[in-house]
Length: 294
Ligand SMILES: Cc1ncc(COP(=O)(O)O)c(C=O)c1O
Image 1 (cartoon, rainbow, N blue to C red):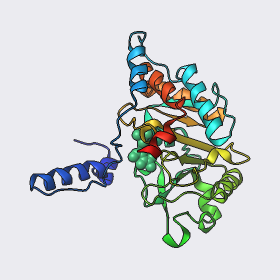
Image 2: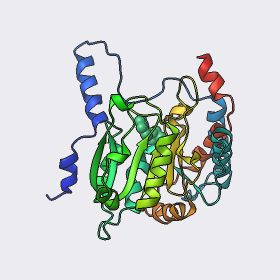
Image 3: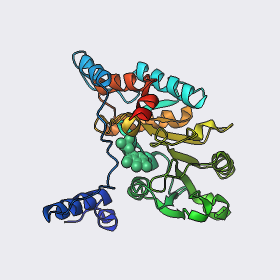
């Protein structure tokens, strides 16, 4: 049978391999310290679970890709409180089923392979989903190394203009998985300037923005001209809600329109009862204090 050659090329998803390796080791009686998939062990706060349960009764029919206005507002308010940015809840926020699916599929709305924008740049080592999604979208993937001597921040100026010219998307991920590095403000400023100059988007995976020691990490949304910045975040790590699948994309209204055009086709709209739980979580002001107390 002929199936996509990309399946073979990419092979088994690394965390599926790790799960199998862990099961094999445990079956041999080995006691493991698990550095595998980042699933928080803290439970979901009772008031968040309650919000989901209360919303179940009123939920009927398909959720829409635009998401509930009350959720978009809660996200916009949180972004305002946390990063001091103004993001329009109606035109600049799209709720997602956690960050992962949106990171995987994002290249599909950006690539213009025939038009010469055929490249996605990812950082290496890195969360594998952006590169894998880009491959399925027909992109050429270029890996930009993260080096210890540069504090695991990519050297954007090492990339020649011809490569930028072909680039549709540059992925950044800070706080970084797996290095734990945080981004200096200058990284986002430089990325935004290059994106403007060479006509590409900067996709900033900020799934770990709320897990930190010391100063709170910054967001790519904080650059003066955020027109080319597309930020992905989620409640998975912040509120231990990996199982709920609740995230968002914040971006300019043109990209958000494209997402609202694309996403109904694949049906990636979060369940409305999850959206109500997410409203409670994004409005939760005390989560930092609770995390510190643990
Ligand atoms: C760097 C990074 N981004 C995104 C995600 C996806 O998180 P979620 O889909 O649960 O929001 C993960 C999950 O571990 C991650 O490590």
